[in-house]
Amino acid sequence: MNNTHKRITSLDILLLAVIIGVLSTLSYHIVTQLNYHWNWSVIPNYIIRYDQVTETWKAGQLTQGLLVTLRLSVWSIIFALIIGTVMGIFRVSSRPLYRMISSSYVGLIRNIPPLVLIFIFYYFLGDQLMNLTGITELSYSLDDKDFPFLTFLFGPIEQLPAFLSGVLTMSLFEGAYITEIVRAGIESIDVEQWEASKALGFNRRKQFIYIILPQAFSQSLPTLAGQFISTIKDSSIVSVISIQELTFAGQELMSATYRTFEIWSVVIVLYFLLTFPCSLAVRALEKKMNRHKSL
Amino acid sequence: MTLWRTINTGLAAVILIIGVSTAVWAGNVRQNLAQESTLETIQKNQTLRVGFSTFKPWAMKDKNGDFIGFEIDVAKRLAEDMGVKIRFIPTKWDGIIPALLTGKFDIIIGGMGITPKRNLKVNFSDPYEFTGMSIIASKSAASGKKSLADFNNPATNVSVRLGTTAEKAAQNFLPKATLLKFSDEAASIQELLNGRVACLIASNPLPSNLAQKYPEKLYLPLKDDFTKEPIGFAIRKSDPDFLNYLNNWIKVTNSEGWLESRFNYWFKTAQWESLVE
Image (cartoon, rainbow over all chains, first blue to last red; front, side, top):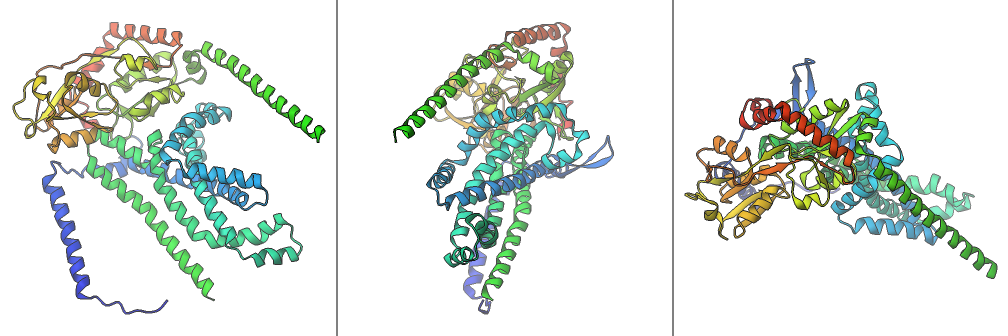
């Protein structure tokens, strides 16, 4: 890091003025030219509402959607990490069969539009799996009130089969990207590490577990964290299969109230509130990693 | 080498035999499934799963996040008469039929108009309500138009919601007009308010509600609805038992006058408006 002086030149001021000018013209047009009655009064109710019956504060409809998005993203990234690690190790395996399995998986997923993939998984695979594992049956017999812990982890039990289908789809999709990150991490480890561990008498499996993977993960930690942010953003795609996450909740509200602009604005802000802290964390993480490198 | 080849051929044969027998076995399972009516599954699970799409005032969420609307009342009553719990599954309209076919829910109760094309994929019950299409036009973009013929020219932009019977009606009644299709209703209404389209075609009561809400911008060019559509429950095919139950349920609730009174409440009054906003 070299310390350059931050000086504001006249060109900067001009640029800023132009940007501010364009933005204000745009907002003026939006407010005046658009035949739209802005009405923000209904919005707070969708974030948090006071329940008259139980006399408590409850999450509004958009907040509930946000919670589903959060659960979906967290579960998806956990499973995607597992899939990605296994497939990543397969990618660098000495056996051609493993390499083929892994590269077909990555090639297939990365070259299909996510929307198409989600439809295929949801309609053809999700249900079969849910019925085979008995999760569909289970969701009938359980009640939200008796299993607060389950509800905390997976959301409303009655939406469980759909939710898990969504998680599965997202995991497989994000897993392909994580596979590549893990592979790059493993390949970035110097060959001397392999040789030294071999000289110390580690077999290939132990080399992976004790020497290579820990280094590979710490190398690609920022990239993985970045992938988590992508997962949060990609989760909006599963609104097409009617998983009731933030985007879906927003669209439902719009059909009921026609408050299109206000609701989209709130949805944007909510997504930003979710992802921006993650971005800051990633940046801090990268700084920390680089400090360790320069030593 | 020959031994190896024999083993390989043997293995391939075994795999093939297993594969074929699985297919035969699966065929049997499918026949058994066909004998099992949805009616039985509903009672076994003690739950009726209803698919619908948010569509004012057929089905929507109120301020507390609970579902309300004409279809919701119908579904609740149906579940009550069956003696089972109800589970609402809000689904996007353009994917609602595939979702029914793949078993995401047992029945569509969502103001679905009976059309021959849809009927090829699903079974419909007898109609339990009738709805009419109407036109709502923009005063700035389509002033002075008073009949369907006035709108039927290439210069007229018409907005409809994708995959609805309104889209079909627009194609039949306004074949020459330019159709703009939106997957969500709010967008199609916004387009009309901005004056980018001359008119919007939708089932009543939306057009009449809009005309009341924006009297300075919009008007109703036609006095009456120009279609009268039957609305039925949609269920999966090959299920005569369930269909029979639904048809009789409709007859019973109709004879009580219950369906009509609910319909009037949701479509002819605005008492429920305060529940939504």
